[in-house]
Image 1 (cartoon, rainbow, N blue to C red):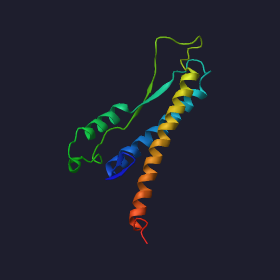
Image 2 (tube, rainbow, N blue to C red):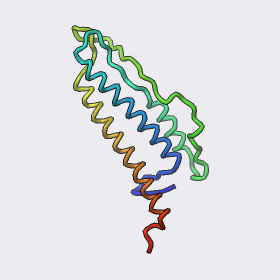
Image 3 (cartoon, rainbow, N blue to C red):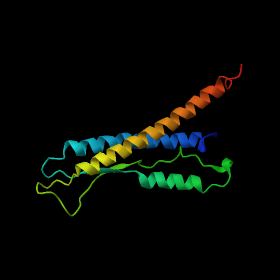
Image 4 (tube, rainbow, N blue to C red):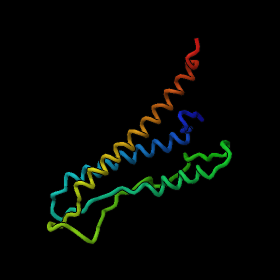
Length: 138
């Protein structure tokens, strides 16, 4: 386990962050599709469900009291996320339910999440590379 700036990154966390990056990638595609179809008649916005799996995994990691007892998430065989169609009660006159401002806000949030996870993975591998090279000692 490598600790840097108060955030512990381990191999199991890297796997979780990798799955989160995959989720962000799929969510970006879905949001882009919603934005592209904002004026399409009878188009129903779509969303990606992943939070239940992520929260379950995060909660299971947080319940552990000993670092040696952290379970590996490699064996988890869940469908990581699913694309669902959003069918609210209210639609626009053309039968479309895409709110472009909401989609743009979701896109910005998703971009920040992606950058955070990518930065954490990048920092982990930079630290690992530094350790392999001798930690900068001469």
